[in-house]
Image (cartoon, rainbow, N blue to C red; front, top):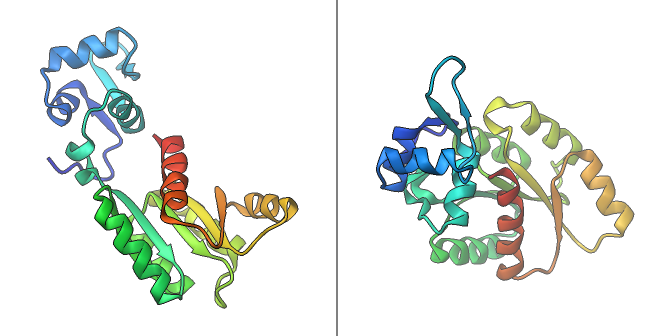
Length: 194
């Protein structure tokens, strides 16, 4: 079942289909406080925000394949083709990620509009990248409100790292890094959303 990316609040019936359980089971999860959500005022109808559902599914080992294909969408903005290919191949081989790449800030903006990435890794040393401006553009787009932005750069001082966070980045990753570090970074930032 492919969920509409814009559907961020679900009924117990929708959650039941996604989790492949009976609606009554979802109601029990909700009533016991395991699955967080809210009731519609003046009714017994329950609503579950999508981030709460994803958190619950991950905590209980329920496969995410009923949601959005189950893939975490990653946008990699870097002009080093060999590195982006290695990263893309490794993430797609893992099976949990759908990856798009862009070589410049302009392309990144166009791809982000269509792809709605969960996380963007951006080499901030690219010529056309104005880190603060790009963060502002992404933050102002309603479709990308939950997108996490991680700067990729060479070694940073703590002060430089903090400056990136002040500009709107959610984190940074220093080169060289390996795939395990990248996946850990994705998992850390995506769990914040979910």
